[in-house]
Length: 275
Image (cartoon, rainbow, N blue to C red):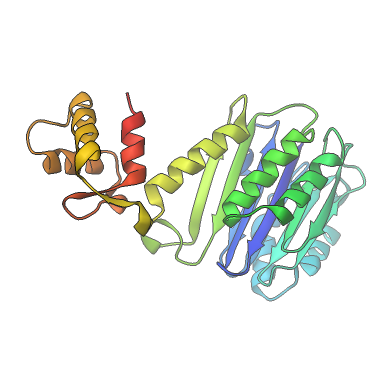
């Protein structure tokens, strides 16, 4: 009832999954991952035990294919299951039981495994793989592009409902306390992939570090527009810097806060778009 792609970035040491389904809250079922261990997508009458069990096996040093074999051989209902795995070294494996509803299947390539069931055709899986291989950007961006390409090629034959993006990286979580680098879900939406991409961009705005080239001095036109916008939004009660600081802290942009007299252009652009 789902299509997904799992991937690995060997340079950044990131593992991740992107998934879409005509199913409520697919992100609560399919994606499992652990930094420096690997990633798993379990779907089609999903056996969610595959997630923690599979990660334990990967942590023991098993390869992706060994994990697929071990998980499925002990499952009496394996004929109904679908599974994708990437291990710590980026090796990928995929499994589709013979009783999964058509179209069902998967493919692997360099640092990815794509799979789906109840699809319009195999073109969805092929499009995900080809797009992941050719796309540029971060792992998250490549996974999202692949997911969108899969939908464009046909997607789930029953339609859309939910989508999720889960990427892990050592100390990649909030304030570096865990590996949950990106963990976004759209649990119910008529266009869940588009919505997932939208909130991904918001996640990057809030939590990605400022690019040095995006730090600009508050002067001239920027100062004028900034003053006008802070006034419109109700923050401008006195000093411009004080109003900007209050806005940044209210909107949770502390990670993008600059020294006095400067502003992150992405924060500025977001503010200008606000009504």
